[in-house]
Image (cartoon, rainbow, N blue to C red):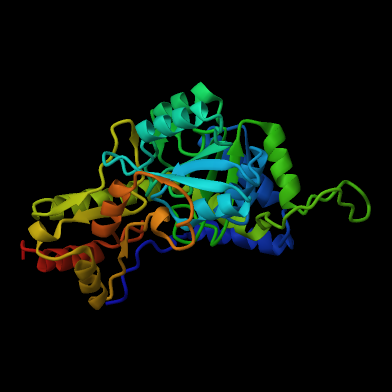
Length: 376
């Protein structure tokens, strides 16, 4: 038996054919016809006007914040339960993140806390420059409630949908719910190019500027002319070719992950002290990662004991994200609440969820969990 990975890449013959097409054309990097096509196809899939294909989701966050005018001294309100890139992008812009707790009903940014934080800052005359939402583990935030709170104060939303491509919120696609949206094509995502991401928006001028800045802000001149500093953040033609093939299989990949989630719920749902991340009734999550909460008193073992039991059987599992307000890199920044996110980190575990996960390997995961708890 081989190792069961948490969320490995899942590629097929179409990706290989498109990659070879890019290779044989000698359009290696930078850019090229597959980048143009990938951007067009991605924008159409998400339902926005434009997309800029970039070297990572983090690059999308950095550029999105810059386009919204975020800079030194500004505040950006965001969720504390997220991957570090969300917070790092804010700090790298010279701004200050303010970490807000999540709702226990969705594990995403608590709209009531956000509304209160915005009202408090409006009274103090120091509104944040932006709100950076996080669509967590394939589930969208409650964007209508968040948007209503932001609209009252004229604060724009940048949507971090890095983990949620393929998810929907009231019929709208993840990545299309803010003024700007970001998706990731990292190796563990549902759609992967090995490494990459994209910035999405209906505003053509924003995406054009993002492309310009991401290509070293080069001016249209026969020599290299630069009137402002830029970045090297564009996606290569080779990786875009892989992304095109991946995107065509998105529905199939999401269906597979949701099937894994349903299997785990059926096979483990009777165990005392074990519950699953809720799926909000306002949308359809991708189940990018299936996450469980373990109550050690009822289950008979804590989250770390279960993770180690899985590891002994060569099965990869991972704790739920450690909240940003607990991370040494970001402890100096303010937080609003945090107890919900802290509890999710303490008790939460992500189970193997890759779309290529076999029935036998799912069974291995279930057997370990059942043996670890009182249900053995």
